[in-house]
Length: 124
Image (cartoon, rainbow, N blue to C red):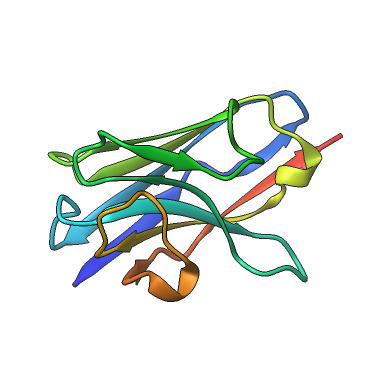
């Protein structure tokens, strides 16, 4: 079992940056593709970014490309999401997730582990 805990969310203004962190306990994350998802009120949970086991490949939703960067530290069992140039439409609950796959993308239904989420609110 892997337990995931996110942190780093908050209330920021448009154009600001935030760095989300996800710490894993239990089994290590080195065997899993890790990803960040988000869910806004009334909307489905959506993929934001993914990173393969070694960090060699990443993948981003179109809405995140050029602004967000996913990274990982397997030794520390950490996953990060650096978010720059934040927009009001980025407002959502952000979740860290892990999946037993080999490509840096997976659907919510394919995730093996989830964190509890951290709220990001971007004001205009």
